[in-house]
Image (cartoon, rainbow, N blue to C red):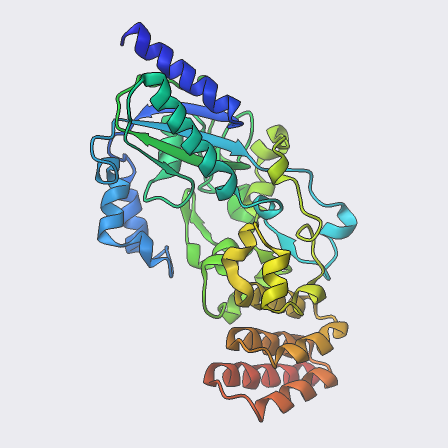
Length: 388
């Protein structure tokens, strides 16, 4: 390793820190060491509806970054803390309000981190005095990003499958910059840590999504169900969602590393928006397309789309079982989206008051969608049992 190369690596890390990345490391872009367990995870079907993860070309790219960027030699891995002060207890514990995963309280992290990675790539080209082929990714590229981050010294992968930094916890967003130039590895500092015998994340998961240490069945994960799942949420899992309407932080909230060492971010873009932090469920169930886009412009919540968010909100209202929600849910039975109508029906069945039953009966006579009709019949059946 030449003095010049070492200096360039150190300068890259320093520049990345100036761009507000909280941790930065440089590692060789070699084939993945976790390719075999990743293939086993796919074979078990744990990726659910995320078929893009199992495409042969995507699997090959995750196994070897050279299939993404020919000539790649180096990965610059970055991590940014996103967590902020949680909502006050009187809001967080209110079943009339939805719970949103903390990474989505502020601006969309893709919009924050990707431009900074591209700026870092431009800086590297200037510093090296030559064009450098590169690719920048934040959560969207065909990479096994937690392995790359761990390889670059940014932490270790915990039993909850998240990357954990021993002095920051796991409230981290990861990014990668692939470079077609060889640079010496440079970790920020030696970071050691393990989960030891702790199983708090496995024990706390309300849906049993962590089927074993380090193994997540996405099909049961609340984050997957409320964001990635495009169709109906399985009925048997709906009660476990409680009032979580976008993502889930439970396995991170109980983690001792977070309880002891987590630090709030100083990033202005990640500070909570009042309209997203503990939003009122009855306000959300009434959103039309324009109001949804306006309220969540620049937010990760747009990823769920209106129909997905209102589906989740209907489930949360059903779990709250508040009769005051019946008029709003009855109006949702007229929603243009069958997905919303079906879950509103389920929620009314959970509330099971006479007005709820009346709304379900009236809807059954006009509902054209077979799937929603089934939800209506199920809801009326459940409501009848509750009345006995």
